[in-house]
Image 1 (cartoon, rainbow, N blue to C red):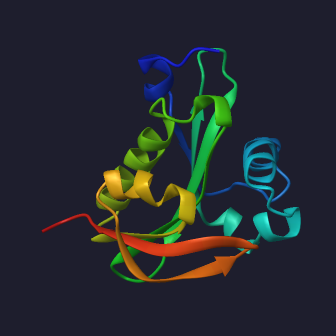
Image 2: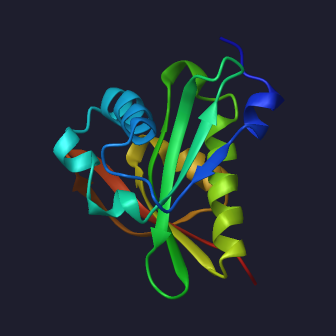
Length: 154
């Protein structure tokens, strides 16, 4: 597999009408979150899936290589979750493009901030994108996390 700018531009946002058992959702989340993060299915799939905006990165062959989802956290803040990129595609820009797509979506919807729970090993990645820690570390889904936030407007 090779990663190209075409792949980066081929991010697709899916939203309203996504059914819990849809083929797209099952493929995206099962193949990435469950495999790359070892998160149990009963934690990964939840009632928010149908109201989230889902972001997907594809390679040139049309294979899913990364996913993320977002939803309104409060009146000013969008929350990003389930950010996952296949191991062989990490460090090649797919994660940054997913976050860029989520930030663009949030700005367009009028949100001023993005909040996320970064896995401890991913904090430097989010830091490089302008996210700052907002509290102490905690365990979520048996994985060490830290809450981070980015202001989208000045």
